[in-house]
Each structure stands twice: as C-alpha cells, then as structure tokens.
Amino acid sequence: MSFLKDLAETLSSIFSDTPSSPSSLNHPQENSGDRTMDGVATGNERTAYKLKGYFELAKEEIAKAVRAEEWGLADEAIAHYHNSQKILAEGISTPVPSYIASSEHEKVKSYRQKISKWQSQVSDRLQTLSRRAGGTPSVKQSEPQSQRVAVSQSSSSARKGASLSAPSSGKVSSATRVPSNRISSHKPSQESATADGSDPKLVEMINSVIVDRSPSVKWEDIAGLEKAKQALLEMVILPTKRKDLFTGLRKPARGLLLFGPPGTGKTMLAKAVASESQATFFNVSASSLTSKWVGEGEKLVKTLFMVAISRQPSVIFMDEIDSIMSTRTTNENEASRRLKSEFLVQFDGVTSNSEGLVIVIGATNKPQELDDAVLRRLVKRIYIPLPDASVRRQLLKHRLKGKAFSLPGGDLERLVRDTEGYSGSDLQALCEEAAMMPIRELGANILSVQANQVRGLRYGDFQKAMTVIRPSLQKSKWEELEKWNQEFGAN
Ligand SMILES: Nc1ncnc2c1ncn2[C@@H]1O[C@H](COP(=O)(O)OP(=O)(O)O)[C@@H](O)[C@H]1O
Ligand SMILES: [Mg+2]
Image (cartoon, rainbow, N blue to C red; front, top):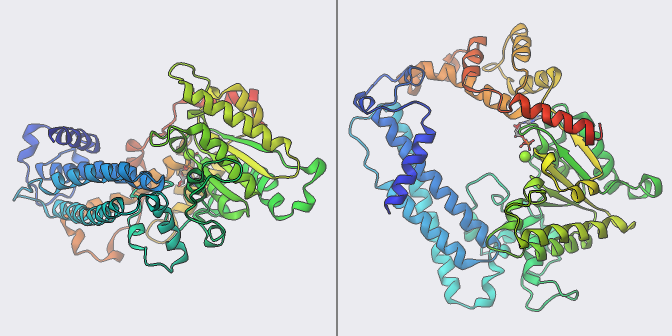
C-alpha cells in the first residue's frame, strides 16, 4: 500500500502552498496568527495536509463507486469502495504528533471525523452491495436507480443506500434531482428489450442518471450575459412554454454553442435553463459518454436521443463538448469516432423533425478544437466573455453583501477597475480569499472571539488576495477566443 502513501504525499505537497523544508518541522507554534502569511509550514500542518490528501483520494474513489452504481455496475462499485476503504484506513492510522497547535488540532480533528464518517458509510454501502450480489442478479442492475428514485418519492424502505451520495459536487451527487412525477411513468426494471430494440438498461440509466433538473441556479443569480440569456429564452424557455407561438419561421434553432474562457458562467447558464425551463434536461458529461464502465458510447448516444425525443421538449446539454467532439485525430480511437458520427446522425434526425423540440446545447472553452461537422450543427454560437466592468461590479456587489463583507463605494469601484481580466470564478475565489484575512489575523483567538468583533473587510485585504489569486486565463488564450468569436460567433 505504499503507493497510496506516495500519492497522499504528492497530494499533500500540492495542497501545501508554502514550501516545506525539514527545518520547518521544528516549529511548533502555539500562536499561529500570521503563519500562513509568513510562509512557514509546521509539522503540524503537514499532518492536516496528509489527512486531507487521504480524504481527497478516498473521495475520488467513492465518487467513482457511486458513479458505477448509477450505471448499474455493482462489481465495479464494490472494487472502488474497497479502494476507498483502504485509503481511509491508512488515513485514520496516520499518527498525530503530540505537539500540535490548537488551530491545527481543529483541522486534524475535523478530517479524522470526516474520514471515520466515510468509513462507516462505505462499509454500510459495501454490505448492502454484497448482500445484493449474493441475491438475485436480475435485480442488481436496476436497484441503485430505484433507490435514488425512492428518495425523491420519499416513501420507501430502500432509502439507506441513497444516503451515500457522491462527495463531489458534480452530476453524481444529487439523489433527489429526478422529479418524481417524471419517474413514475418509468418502470425501474425491465427484463426485455424495448420495442425499438434499444437496451432497457441504457434507457433506465439515461432516465435516472442523466436527466437532471436540479433547480440549483436561478436566472437572476447570473450576472450579465444578457445576450446569452436572451438566446436561451428564445430557444428553450419560451418555446417550451408557448409552443403555439414558436412555429414556422419562429421555429427555434436546435443547436447552440456557449463558448468562452473558463469560469465565466457557461455551466451556470445551462443549469439555470434546467431549472427555469419546462424541458426535460439531459446533462451529459464527456465522462459519462466515454466512461470506461460503459465503452458503449455510441449506443448510449443513440439511446439518449431516443429518450430525449420520447420526453420532449428536451434539452441535451453537453458540457465541455470539445472533449468528445474534437477534431484531434491523434488518440482518436475507433470507439470515439463512432460515437461522434452517431451523434451527428442523431442530431440531424432531431433537426429535420419539425414537430419535435429537442435542443442540443454545447459548452466549451476550446471552440477551436471542435469538429467542423459538429460546429456546423450548433448554428447559434454565443460568446461568453470575461466579465466587463459592469458585470464585475454586479458580481462583486452580489458577493460582498452584508455588513461583514461590504466595502465602501469608492473601494468597490477601485476593485472593479483592478480586477480586469478576472473571470467570474476568479472573482469568487478572490472574495473568498480576502474574506479570510480578518480571520487569519485572529490567530489563536479564533475560538473565543465573538462573531461581531471580527473586523470588516478592507481594500488592503483584496490587494493581498490579488497577489495569491491571479486571473486564470492567459492573455494570449483570451485573444485567441476573441478572434474565434469574430470569425465564427453569432455576436
Ligand atoms: N456571470 C456570472 N454570474 C455569477 N457567477 C458567476 C458568473 N460567471 C462565473 N460565476 C462564478 O463562477 C463559477 C464557475 O462558473 P461556471 O459556470 O462553472 O463556468 P464555466 O462553465 O464557464 O467554466 C460559478 O459557480 C459562479 O460562482
Ligand atoms: Mg463549465
């Protein structure tokens, strides 16, 4: 198991943003006030980082296991749960030094608690899975899905399994996202192939895994991006609500590409569409199509469109579409070529059908790499640029709400000016970093201080934070995207 240790070490060195030297191990500081700013890493910190490393590793394994369960692959899931168990066991047996600063102690304690909580959940889950594996195999495939569904209907005894949702915030995490009214029309277990020859297991999987209507993002949460909002309103939201008005010449376009730098709200926009429109929303990630568990991407695409047609109006959202639909021929294997051409065939099928409403929305940071044939079909291409001054103002105002976080008007304007080139997610990270500054000053007093005694934010906090959080996009990349937009974009 030493490879795990190595991995965890590597991870911990990544998490540690301060260089660690052997001498730093002899710094048992009780008052850790400015430690992070001084760049001194103590041995204590290394323990927390190590635990974090184990925790993150285990988290990845659990996410894979949950994913495998969702795909109905119990053996695969069991293997990943076992891996995570080993990692968690190693984590929990990491020795905790006796000299430990109090602030560090809290971190270590919290990681140990998290680890042991996951340990018990994983072992519960493993028990359930192995019991089932010993039982009737025909139930095996559909059980995880029916459990998830059971949660949204909140009326089943099979709830235990679904309580272990994936730790990541991604598509696999929400057990309640499938609306019960939609599911009730689907029988969880079908033994024979459906009428059109599609694999019932795949249909089941698409219905329960890919359909995502998590209403997590509201329209008004998104700052700026008026053009994109307008396009989505016209293409998806209104046509699904007023089908009668959007016919003939007003028939909405069926393909839309959202492109632009990372962290500018593309995924957010799609999520808002999912919660605000009445269309069935299929959230397809590259990993779910090319997943090693399936290896049947082509069949999955076919089934996906079939289900989308049967439940229209539908939106098929493909995040990071470049990773599946790129032109890059190196590394392109037969399977991905077939997947791509199946996608094109299916897409043409839905565009030529004037009755139905199935819309494909792709999002990408690298539109240059998209396959021409795919690009041609995504007729509406909307550039989601880095936020300009007014959007940054809106974003910062929204983030810096409340007495504890607000800045005087003049300072806010200065911040708006100084953050040119920052994306939405950079700004978010910047605010989070700045908000930590007053807390770090407290040092050991953090445990005793009253919440209202913590000082408010100052411009200086942001200046300091800006030395750590830099714009994540290089200027050259940005210019490349702008150029692409002028050539191919719709605005
Ligand atoms: N226009 C925006 N309005 C509000 N928040 C934004 C905006 N753009 C980015 N963000 C913040 O950045 C995060 C990442 O955005 P995301 O939609 O995932 O970016 P993308 O998909 O373009 O890479 C969001 O969760 C949000 O906190
Ligand atoms: Mg995204």
